[in-house]
Length: 79
Image (cartoon, rainbow, N blue to C red; front, top):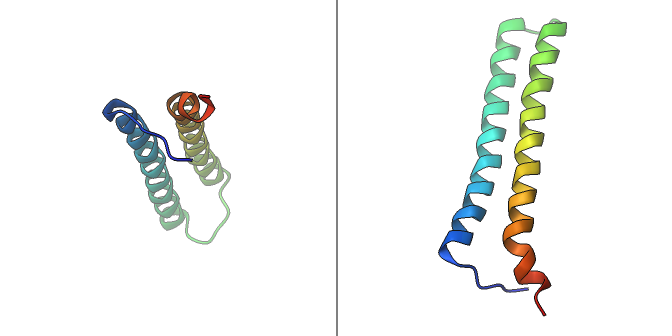
């Protein structure tokens, strides 16, 4: 389905995409840093830090879904 988006709507969509990409990059950086510090051994604090970073990605995705639904929904559902 092709939709005509205004400039502002494109900005919102681009922001949502950028937010998720940024969150993923930060999550990867945090995981790499934690792995570097703890090495191969198991550390409960390291696991918690990684879980929190992954939770931030999940929140970013949820925000992006809300933005996408609010921006694209009216165009897709319009008669």
